[in-house]
Image (cartoon, rainbow, N blue to C red):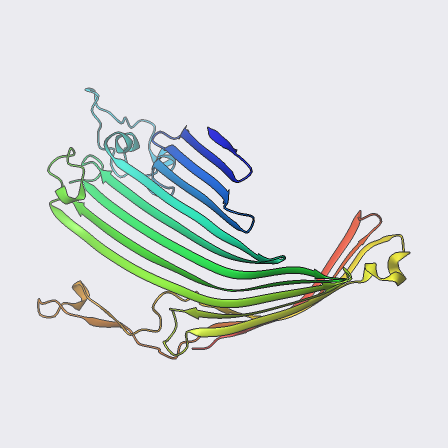
Length: 381
């Protein structure tokens, strides 16, 4: 269901949906709800605001994955056809090494619930003709909960686990934008800064030996077997500028420069500077090719640039310590080193040189694109 409307200053769109599905395998069901709101408002002829907001909730009642005895398809191939899942009184029975998957579904729980909320907003201010400032803000919040409960008939004593994962991100980008035409020269430019961060949290608990299958929660287990919690965070701070020039609709020149700072590197080496330059020549627009009828487009391009990589985990430059069972000393709690500090850790950079040709002939029925590139990676640590 959706609803939309507005006037010359305000426009909105609101939608919602619900989906329920049952798979061919018993116990594999899905319920999904979505909601969305798009909103735009013009305060004046120079100032505008917009927002896109969405939320979704997915509940997945799952069956076991393949290649284990808790999976219905795998068990169907391994189970003898003479084995019955119930006794004469209609009660579920233990079917031995191959799990009674009907009892697993009827008496157990294997649920995955995902809740996601996201929003993007912008503010746009026209300063001069062809010059405007824009501020963008966005969030993406993900909450995942996995709940497992296995009854005594399949897992002696019973088993339960709960896994909670949250991943919350937010981003802001603020730019000054230029788009002007000066005679035969078109100029475009963007300058700005951005900040992005993410907080990840993970908790897992499990337990065994329940006095009754009616007790569903992990806390009811007589034997807690695992407790795990992890938290991690990263941030990226960037400043950038991009320019492009187009002359006579046939000569194109572009350039970019950015400086990125990542929390993943040592305090003295968090920032890296990267740049790129490219050019294009639309040869088919030249007078000496204008009268060549079978050539519809001929374009030559070349570029050279550098970029950086910070996908190396969240705390690789720090000296870390761990605790827990492996750190106990003579029965007392303790700490142990788990990672050696590396304050000199730097960005991994790479450079790339590209040449390309694009050709279209015979009313664009035949086209050819040829590209040659050389990429040179460099690693600093």
